[in-house]
Image (cartoon, rainbow over all chains, first blue to last red; front, side):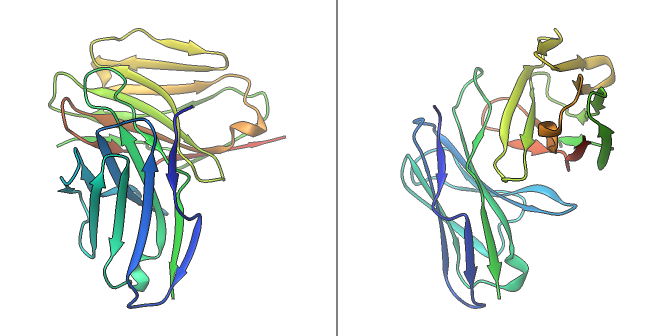
Length: 114
Length: 114
């Protein structure tokens, strides 16, 4: 069974803290993604990665960075957490190619910044 | 630019009713992929179906069916004889060829009451 695992379901952090959200996939997928989900705004892409050590900005990268040192792991970093980063964060992975292009998602991390 | 529109924000039905969730998309790509995902209250997005742009065959899977019409740029999802367990937010998504990323609609919340 395919699996994308996010390190935490719920996190509470203080304003100004550095926050790490970790995501691991066991499907040997080349592509990994971080989205945030907010009511009324749907899913918005923060960053994505096509390969180890490669990263591309998505639609809303400001305030975030990412790290992909190993193929199976993709980390999202909030350098200095702010209250407007309170949200649900979803990690996903997918294979490259023209077949089986669907993305598989983790269970989500609900982050609250106080 | 790609765009996915799910005009129905919320739908409420009574169990055993049939319900159709609408999805309209915009893309300039000739090759593209369409998806439906289900997000139950637990938060994880569950992949339901992928449809390639060159395959307009409709698909049925149990109580679920999908109607893909390139002429109207629509990819609608019908649940027959809805059940309470179908209550969730449903997302339609679009992906172009190669290394393009998923573009999501804002989702439709389906509430099925007993």
